[in-house]
Image (cartoon, rainbow, N blue to C red; front, side, top):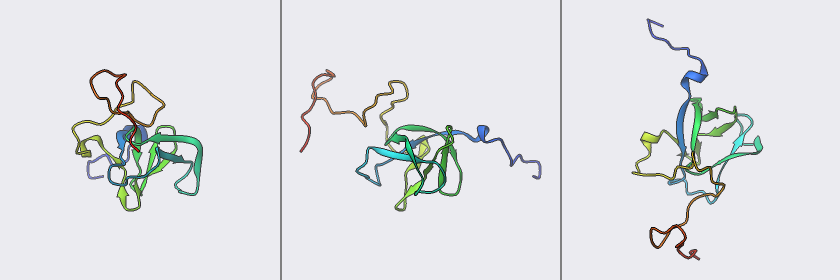
Length: 122
């Protein structure tokens, strides 16, 4: 259009995002995927933990489609939960892309020794 490319294959629009729970503060371990653009259509097993890096396309209509073809809402209760990494105003986030741990996060340590765990808070 006027010399600008406006229609591109979806694979060319794929970007990396972070599933952010800092503002929403949901008590869940993460977010379940949806099979369609409906909150009432949860995927039976697929989902992501909070602060996971996710790859896909922001569809621009309140929904994100990941590279597997599943959907997630970009906003929950008025809070944007799917952010581009550069929009996360933290110096660091936990990155599980290489380790692929099955846990929902990481526990604090008293020292740099990974076995020196802090006691669980009540």
